[in-house]
Length: 331
Image (cartoon, rainbow, N blue to C red; front, side, top):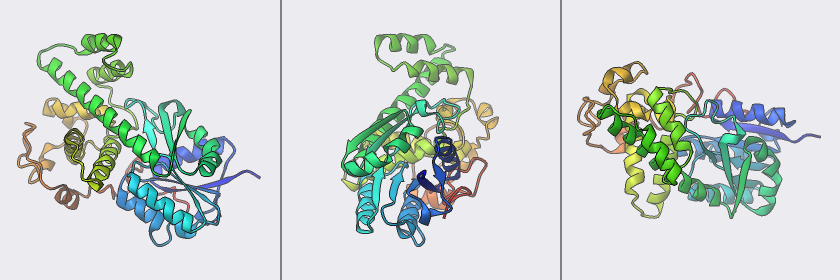
C-alpha cells in the first residue's frame, strides 16, 4: 500500500509539493490524522509554531509513528524543539529546509533541479523520508542531528542573499554610468570570482525579466530566520541585517510577490517600479521619508510588522504565500 502524506502551511508550496509527490505514486491523505508523513512550509516562525504546537496542530493530530517533515526556513532552536516534542509523542521529525538555487527560476519550488534539501534528524527518520525528499529535490543531503538542516540552510541563505544584493548593486553602478555590468560579471564568472549562475541573474536584471516564484517575501523570511537564530545566541550579523532591512523595505512598498532578483527595482527610477506595483509612499512614517533616496532610518521591526502586517499573516493572495493552513491544508 502506498504511503500517505498531508501538508500544512502555505498554499502555493503545498500544492506544488503535493503534485510532485502524487505524480510519484504517494497518496494524499484525507487529513493530518491519517497521514504517514506530514510536510510543512511556513514563512513566519509564529505560523510554524502554530502549525506544529498549536491546538489542532500537527503534533496533536499526527498518528503514532508519523514523520513530521519541515521544509520551512526556520531556526535550529525551533527545529530541535519540534523534534523534542515529536519524540515525546512517539513521532519522528526531520528538519528539511528547501534551498532554492536560482532566484530567476520560473518554477522555483516545482523543479527538482532547482532545489537542494538539507535533512537533519535521527538516521532512521531521515532514511525513512529520503525517497519522498528525493521526489522534491535531486540533491538531498543528510546533515546529522536534529536542527542541523536548519543550520546548513542558514549558511546558504547568508551566501545567497549577499551574492544577490551584490549583483543588484553592481547593476546599479553600471546603469548609473550608462553601461552594462554583464561583461564584468562574465569575466568574474570566468575567473571564479562569481558563480556561473551570476551571469544569468545579471542578464535577467538587465533585460527586466522579473518573473519567477522565488518571491522576495520568501527571501525576506529566509533572512529573518537567520537573524532570529543569531539573536538566540547573542550574535550580531551586520551583513544579514543590512540585507534583511533592504528586503523588508522592498516588501513593504509592494515587492513581496516579485521574484528575488526584482530587488533591482529598488535602485531604478520610480516610474519603473510603479509598473510592477511598487509604491514608495508606503514607507511613510517607517523610514522617515517616502522619497526613493535610500537614506532610510530603520525603525523597530516590530512596529513595521504591526502596522503593515508583514509577519507573513497575509490574506489569501493570488499565489497563496503566507496563508497558514491555506487552501491546501489537510487538517
